[in-house]
Image (cartoon, rainbow, N blue to C red; front, side, top):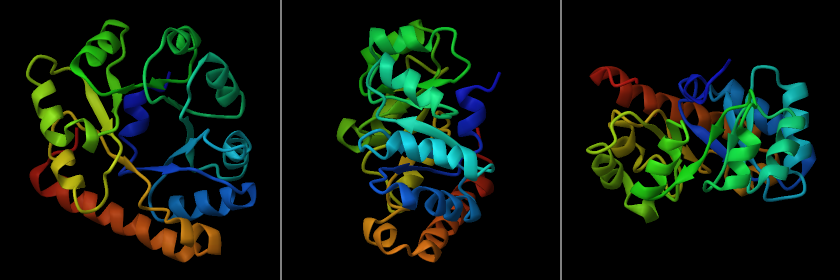
Length: 218
């Protein structure tokens, strides 16, 4: 069974996509994949979220598309039915845990504090979203978490871009980072897929530059 670790290890970065127009979903996903970014988180913040996941899953076979902003068990079930390969939540609730039990689709829940991290770990979850990363203490917080809890990995998201991703990717506990800077709204609205492709390639090159010299890939 594919795990959250398996998926995130394939992600130089994870673009967080809030798609407002279903027509944009497939070309947007294709541009990101062509740029070297195959793992895509499509949020359920808009009515186009679930249909976009379904469209990408069907039309872009090289994409690993998952659902973000999953808030409850019903969201979880609908996202899986739409073709999500992984589920990302901003936090961890009982209904989310119940929905995830027995599902082959891995859950990546959000945590912001050491108590939330300990609860997730008690539930057998060892691959987590650190959210909102910058507002919750940034890389310094993750470095502190690694003292008492060293067997958990993270995808920090929230306030991360090319200017600060290095401080996260240098941490052994960080598998990858998530963010929305790869898909500026003006580029999406104008259908400037070449720009999206270029931003994806730029991100991949930067991650490679950070990871490879020090041999930091988890």
